[in-house]
Length: 455
Image (cartoon, rainbow, N blue to C red; front, top):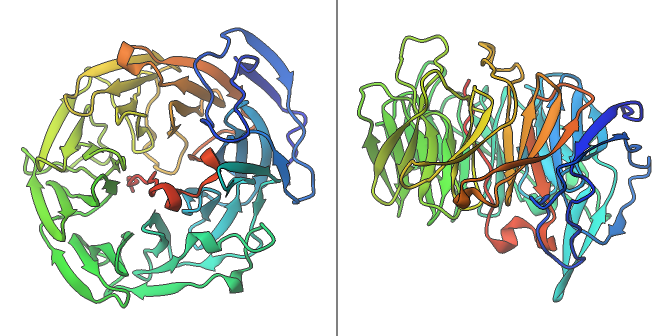
């Protein structure tokens, strides 16, 4: 375990961060924090004991991958919690229980216990914290890919085999309140006809929405049963990549000429204006029928840096294209959704911008960092964003900083960068969990934080 004792952290606004009651409330920082600056030594890593401790306040924990491991930050106090060492280029996906992450290193999936959770108890909740731990076991996978949770299941996809493992996320924690032993977690393998870069979204009735394709091309999407048998499919989606889960049991899939929408048991193709328009990276919201997606139109580009994005309305089956200022772009790690469904883009001029999801009107922006350029190597760090309630957590790899931005006043044209943390390592991917109300997402309506990744 890598020590963080000697790291110097700079925190803005810690003194005024809101303390929450023991039985509920939001877990993110708030915009009422003081704007004064202070310096403090890094807090000591959690005790070597993995035993849980009951705490009075729920919090958000943020995970940040780096070259050599994962940093865990308390999102309420903006202090380092611990680091977990693991070699390889690591990818972080929520495992579906609001506590664990699937950590992919290209050939296996491990489980990272973030060490903070809630437990409902009658009319109130209890909250617990423990040392973050990485499972000492893993599931082998031929080319790790997308991990998606919905309808009480989580699907771990393997591109190299064209198969995926399905688990009940609530079984990832054992009776001792620690990550369950590998042999105690029941898995179901679903195999598709051919290997391909794909995904699997769990649907009701033991069905799954998957990409259709092979190693050479991807042509559409299908609904398959628990044995991988096709129930229905649509082959009008060349270059399938990226998906989103939105309101009203509706799903979208990105194509190179528009988007596929699946609702009420049927696929609908929505054609883009251009013959080539790739909507391969998407951010959905369970409370909104609108999907935020990128919009790339240069088929021959080795790396296109788009200066427009799209809003896909799954109720009207339409695509709205929104133009950014000239010379301003974004990447697959810099799109997210706000607390009221706003389209959030972390753009290459160093701003976080918020747009109305229905009109495409820019509502607010805040300067966070210097201008930056997307690397042509997709694995290399670039600014990234993860949102919990009304706080956006944003990384700046150039300065090794994590920013906390209040989204509470977007409607009034304002966003506030109210706390920053200097990190001991250069951050790459970001994700997080919250013990809000002490209820697992499945009990209060599934939460989805999955975005298609551009590779």
